[in-house]
Image 1: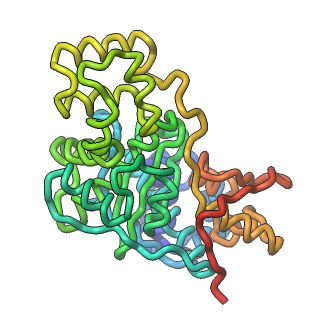
Image 2: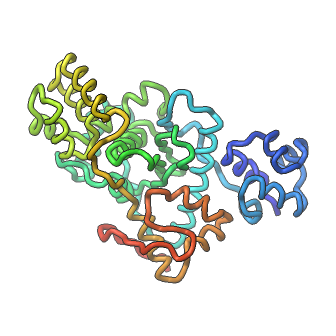
Image 3: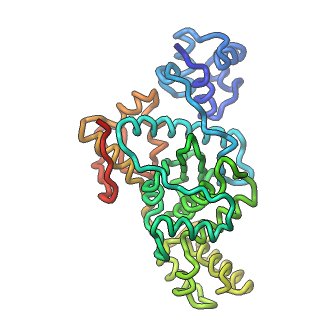
Length: 362
């Protein structure tokens, strides 16, 4: 039995209109409209053409209905001119990620959700409250992906083909999800993770979570969370030169630009010093990248441990993908840059951090 909503979801995932899918699948526009609304169901040969055009296994369309991630609850961190079609494709991918996590939760006991909803305090206060609640004190934040996962946030990667979307976060049925662009520098990835945490904490489903003001608040939360006021004031001199900033950013594993902004915000750099420092950093390549930065991005310990445990039971990632009705390539996009797992052939050895214990559901 074909599930109409799955045809719609797969089409959105590929960023296609009904007319474009009609051309690709050589199926009439009216027929496709009928299939998506459930007025009629495609014959097996027609479904095969649709599946091929969308690069989804035919079995995907015969699964149970999927609830898409709530569009009104998503905080997008994307370029201002990013098309609605790209955002819809990212949201559809997020729905597939939620489907994968439901599969995982049926088999593993994952960390409980421990992300506070603080309404709308000022971002610096909110960041301090979360740091205190999580026992971080004034220390540099550890691996941000590990930190989010340890407190119940489900973390996935965004499709590398949609580089214009930096990240997004959303609450779904009381579970927080974060999707990260894993093509950016490690330092910028940490900031994106903290930014999305800010949205989850300050802009839950009952609060506005989009627009310039919400983005400003999330940026201030991330800056305060990663670079606590007392820590920065204690380590960085007033009027610091570029070489001091480049050394100092290693304390908090942030980008040089982020530390420069934070120092200006805290009054350690005057307006003139801030502008001239940004200009010098830009000349050195720190606006578009992070020369001599952390290098390796922070990866997922939950997903890596899950697939390591599955491999120990001779369950290959490709088998998981097939059970979900996905191609290996589709599932790989959800994990790209977050695990060492590969899906073709034997793959590389999977190494998993030892700081998080996952138990298998009996």
